[in-house]
Length: 177
Image 1 (cartoon, rainbow, N blue to C red):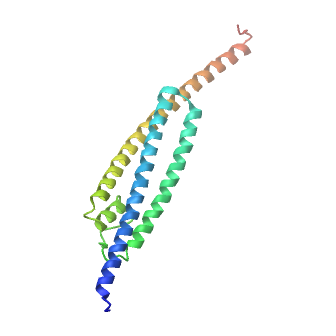
Image 2: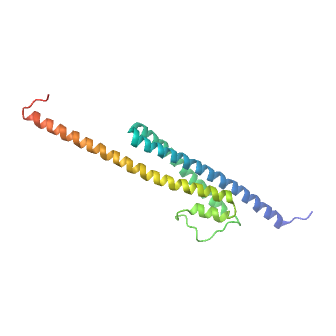
Image 3: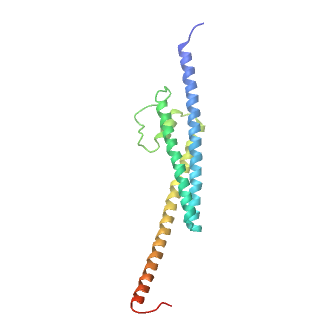
């Protein structure tokens, strides 16, 4: 039996690509799931701010969002592991156009690694879309929270003014009815 090094090497590369592809799909699916969860929380956050004015519920949502964001940060570490593992992969299109500080670094790197994988492309597109939606909703939630805080400041200032007026009236010998 003759050993065919090139054939075994190609089989090993193909198996590594399948394994890497599976890992990428799992990470993309998890990221999309977390993004959807975060988007739902932001919608609930807006509802609590605008309709309910329930600050206890808002604090609970913010805490839950923090947990999801922590999970997303752990996921980002997993992405870096995948990218680092792929740097030894001959199928990787490793070039100087990829910079970790660039926006979309991971997506660009993954798309370069799997240019013909429509499932990966779709997952990346869906994740990008929901990430854009998250950013817009988060901006809206922040604006609504700022409006709410401004209203509270106004109420507090009004109450302070009323207390000051009552104190002045009392010092002048008046009685409060």
